Amino acid sequence: ITLTINDQPLCGSDGSISALVQGAVIPGGANPILLLTDPFGNTTISTPVMTFGNEILFGDLPGGTYTISITNDQCLSGVSEQITLTAATSITITEVITNVTCNGDDDGSITITVSGGTPEYGVQVNDSNENGTTLNGTSGQTVFVFTGLAPDTYTILGGDTNGCPISGSFTITEPDELIGNQIIIATAGCPTNSFIQYSATGGTPTYTYAFYSNSIDPA
Image (cartoon, rainbow, N blue to C red; front, side, top):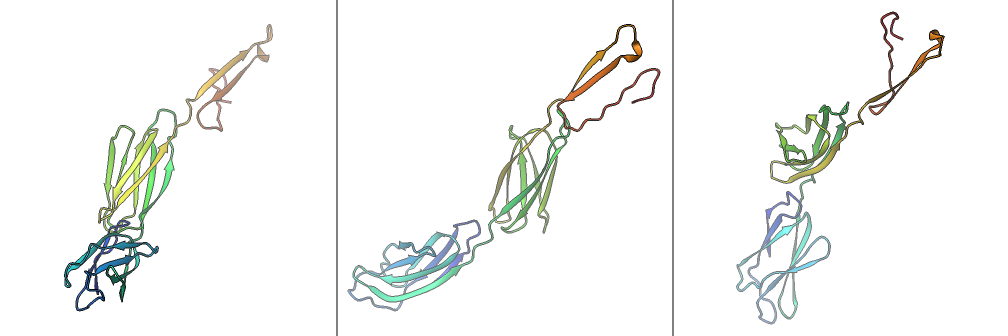
């Protein structure tokens, strides 16, 4: 048996091996069949090899070591060979999200770092209305920064140079609307004892207050 790697697995289970059987006689005289045992112990039976010299293709294979043996309807021939497929590293992404600063703004951002697969990468970010921005990386680029994002849930799409997919999702949030609450308390007949109580809700605590009038400095 002569084994040949046709395709190394680039995007999961897309590797392939071809096996060529020649120059052997199997007891019983029946047409030979190839058995492929994968790295997990599962066995795949080929279609019968009608004549010696035919090449059989095994596809949709992940990385790992495979054993291919020859048999027929009656017995194993005792002939087997091994071959190893080397898978590309899986693509992973990490995200650093900056949420919107103030209610109603669109200053959110995300930094996406891509690793694994086969550079160069392309990354696209789409909002919930499928409006998107695409960044195509240069050679060696692994970090992609998307700015000017409004509050929404976004999807991440893209791929490496072999077309292996990049995917993910993230949410940009915004603080609640900032609302001020003013209470003026005046003491009858004694205006110098009057005061203003002011509080705020929403936004992003902690809060800073300033008081202005026509006669006094800010306090």
